[in-house]
Length: 161
Ligand SMILES: *[C@@H]1O[C@H](CO)[C@@H](O)[C@H](O)[C@H]1NC(C)=O
Ligand SMILES: *[C@@H]1O[C@H](CO)[C@@H](O)[C@H](O)[C@H]1NC(C)=O
Ligand SMILES: [Cu+2]
Image (cartoon, rainbow, N blue to C red; front, side):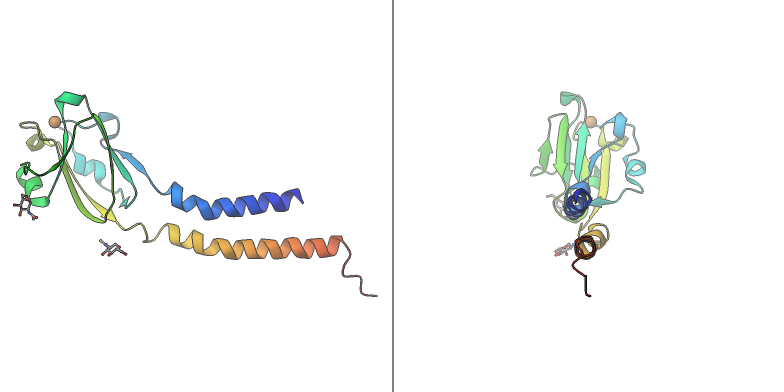
């Protein structure tokens, strides 16, 4: 009895997990934080960013900032006047849509010395969560079926004399 309860709890957890577990928080530059003279393209290389993930920019507040810009501004290290700006020093930016995203520091000379990050965000509906959430109902069905059969056997309901 206890084991069937455990199994059902486990099965429910398996269904609920993908929604939460795959939202990753990325600290940009890891322990280096958001600074000049760091290769953020090398940092981003090999990482796969999904919609729902979050970027965290850590820096000492007045010394840097984060602007979300477009590709042209990124390449030229300029900040268009209408750009979204972050200044807290612990800026958490959720990746809400798929596509290319560009960020840079607006302090004079910082972008041109490497304080810029470009990433590509993928639709989260892509490969990861899909298989586990679609196989979970089948797992529950079979476990319930097995528990039922076990009960039938234990209770001796199949006493066909
Ligand atoms: C980037 O933004 C600037 C200023 O808002 C604009 O003039 C330019 O056309 C934009 N470039 C692209 C590729 O969207
Ligand atoms: C992401 O998914 C949305 C809705 O399913 C779609 O409209 C959009 O084009 C997709 N974007 C990319 C980059 O695949
Ligand atoms: Cu800076």
